[in-house]
Length: 240
Ligand code: GLN
Image 1 (cartoon, helix red, strand yellow):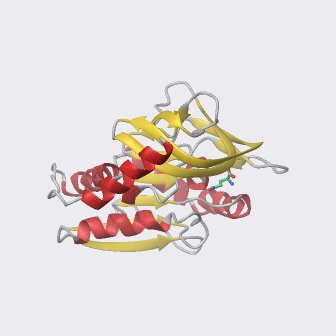
Image 2: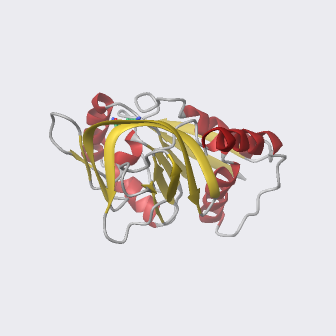
Image 3: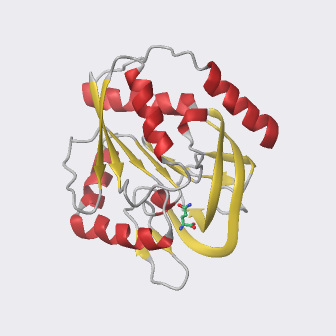
């Protein structure tokens, strides 16, 4: 078996160690003997239906987000990614990437940036800087990460949060929600990077990708996640 991971705007949207999520996904496949290819899909590249089995979209500052929002719309990549998510292709987006997959992102002192419309959410820059360790309760049990954003994301009617904040700010620092999940797509503010310390979520994304690509449930072999789980436990004990 083989999976192709699409690293959206990896040259522009990669802050606070978000590339660690790509590394975690790649290693967790290789450790199981599954072939993996990572393709950076940025301004000059096309995205074709059925080409990518799992999308990753990292964080970025307002300046890069402006460039990327425009390219997502003008190149048609946004529309294709949305259609792929609708058919169940998994996607993980963090912070700036997450913000561009909602209805819109309104940075400071500039026009609203159009979102791809995957998540029923919208984001507006605030004068608060939400920085620090974050711990949430979710369908994946505890998830830990690090957040650094001024954007406040609000869930629209019917939006399902990824989880509820135990420590930290989450979507907006007020309604205790963090992130959003829609079909097999996840958006959240959890840098860190997220997946190395949250192996259950990593494997959930991989199993969804295998199921969509091969049309059957694929149960991944169990890995020795002692270190990963210990890293999460230490983070929770310090911040949770
Ligand atoms: N520019 C966005 C904000 O500050 C996203 C930043 C990020 O990706 N960490 O909210």
